[in-house]
Image (cartoon, rainbow, N blue to C red):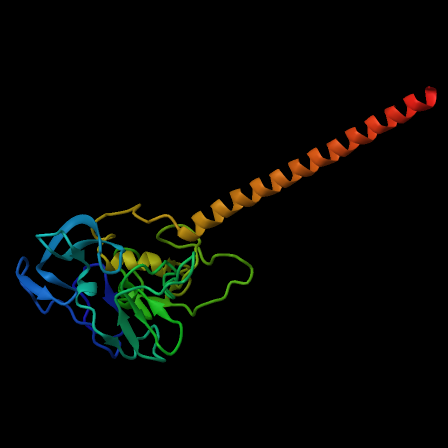
Length: 265
């Protein structure tokens, strides 16, 4: 497999499929690509972050840029093949390139590798529900990321976390979160790296010192909003019940006083 040239990314093993790159295209040279047929695109390099118009995810460093409409694409999105066969992250079936995400309800569909929502380009399996971002397709089962950790890392099997614990603490972001995880292969080294953090070694963010660009989780936002709505509903229900009980007690007391007054007469 041929990967875009990046100092922060080293493959430990070569997968059996081919992912095209820029074919030694000269920086600044303009070419027409099917992903943006309106205008020619130029392969440029800049440390500034950008949002890829293909996968809708962030990137920095090398990108294809339209100098007429500022349409920008990751190199691996602009040159994505129509099919990936025998991909090490899903070797059971071929994966087809899809330019539009699958509609998955209010919470949306998520990538099976990094667990982030899929909002644009994906590679999708027609035989099962597996899908992943083009950036995740640049990962493999065994990787080395010199900017993050000196030892080779291997991708752990996907796990179902029945206890609700969101996984291992990542050596890069220092957090626990869902998604696939790499672990260090060295003896007595407990280093772990989220696949979602490993993507930053591929998309140029880490190499260009770009941090804190992660978008808020739609699922987390939805849960927070739903919690507020439920609490307000319960509060209103309790308040309504309390008012109803108070009205009944008031009516009962008034009726009792009226009956006592009649007996005294």
